[in-house]
Each structure stands twice: as C-alpha cells, then as structure tokens.
Length: 125
Image (cartoon, rainbow, N blue to C red; front, side, top):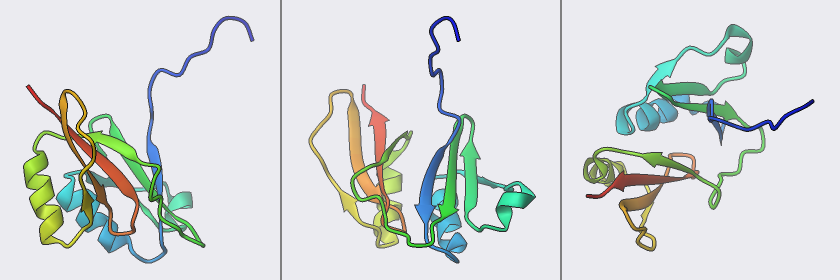
C-alpha cells in the first residue's frame, strides 16, 4: 500500500444491548433522540437489536449475550434542543449526570435504558 491512508468519517456507531429489549431501544433512540429506525439486513435481523439513523448519524444496537453497559466509554451526540431532551429523559426516569463545563457547549451525560452512557452536546452562542 502506498500513500497515506486516513479515516474520513464514521459510518455508524455500534452500542450493545440486552436481548429482547428492542421496544426500549425504539422508545429511547426513536422517541427521545428523534432517530428513525431502519430495517436491518435480513441476515443480521435474526440476531435482534435495532438500527437508527437521521442524516449522517447512524446508531446500531446489537444484542450482546453477556451484556454489560458501557458506563464510561460513550458517544457524543450534537443536539439542537438539549433542554427538551433532558426533560423527556427525566420524565422517563433515565439517569442524567452533569459534568465539567466545556467551552462552546451545554452538555450532559444520559444513560440509555440499558445503562450505556451517552454525551449530549448543544453548541452555545
């Protein structure tokens, strides 16, 4: 191979989830975060889980047999109405954690229904 190879985009992010909780995934990723569920390819659909997207944002939730949530590792999502998302997460009893301020962003951590940590970030100014 010659030349410099570079990564230029993230095609999708995969998060783990427990088996049989696709409805919880739909409620959070679809209703709270506003992503649209898209069909998984037939060969992958039989494994369970769910795929969501909106524009260039793609989140794949895959069933993990011995599921353990990612409590530290996380995805950072840019959002356009963090206040509404926070209110909806609280209404649904989801765990929310504030963190140190980050210049240029209002941000929080929220844990999805499976305990995976997600960072939600809204640009300020």
